[in-house]
Amino acid sequence: MAIVRHKQPLLRRFVMYWVDHLRQAFASLGELWRNPLASLMTLAVLGVSLALPSCFHVLLKNAELVEGNWQNSSQISLYLRKDLPEQNIQELKQRILLYPEVASVTYMNRDEALKEFREISGFGDALDYLDSNPLPPVLSVIPDPRWQNPEGAAELLAKLENEPGIEQGKLDLQWLTRLQGIMNLLRHTITGIAVLLLSAVLLIVGNTLRLNILNQRSEIEVLKLVGATDAFIHRPFLYTGIWYGVIGGMLAWWLTEVMVIWSEGVVKELAGLYNSHFRLVGMGGIDGINLILLGALLGLIASWFSVHRHIRDIEPS
Image (spheres, rainbow, N blue to C red):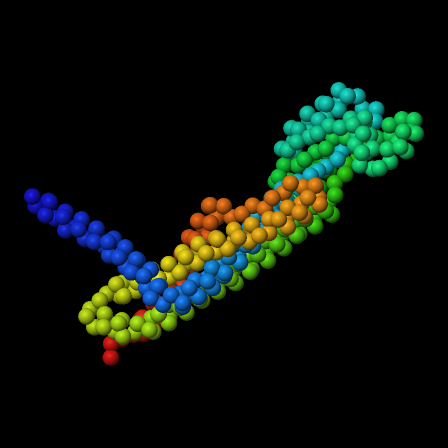
């Protein structure tokens, strides 16, 4: 019986601790609707501030998908000797496939090369007057993703050109360098803009809670007079900051998806001009939840600094 008497108060305190947290959390949510116009304006600003970096994130994600679809830009073309026997070509292909830097190898014999050249060059009638096929057999090598950067592709090309039977290797390094430079510029620009906008979220939430604390100064003084703990006084404001972040993140998610849907038609039309079936990809569930969690974290950080800075200065007169 003595064990039961000791466990019940401990269990009751544990349950009441979380019940008190839930009560204050929902009470702070209701506090937002006491001043609906001011709260909605703040939430709108937070939603737009979070939507801008999330839109940039979607832009970067789609750009990386396009970059992945352009992996043939790092394709290495190996032109073989015209008199190289078919058996030797197959052995060479299998040997290149064993390279750890190589993802795939495609073989195109001389007849296939001439057919492809006829289709894309526009000189079909002129080619009929040739006495023989002037084109060599070709091996098209796609590097492993880890080697699709300019330095890795150039190193792989140098190794492949040492293989017997290869007359010449070709790789458009300038295009690869430009593509990598564009993607790096896009990543750095988006990161910088995102940091600025997320800092704006911290300032908006912090300033909003500062005004709330000043408006409730007399209530805070009374709570301190009756002996309320600092945690009890701080908790509602902390939950308010979290609610600002959560609702702002949900609004930002919705705005981002609206922007994706709105831009989808234009992107589809542009992709059609390049005979591409590319479609915009939205945030998705995981990115959306991460955005809401990020908003909640920013709201908590901003509210924590604001609460500890301003409530500490309030003392009963």
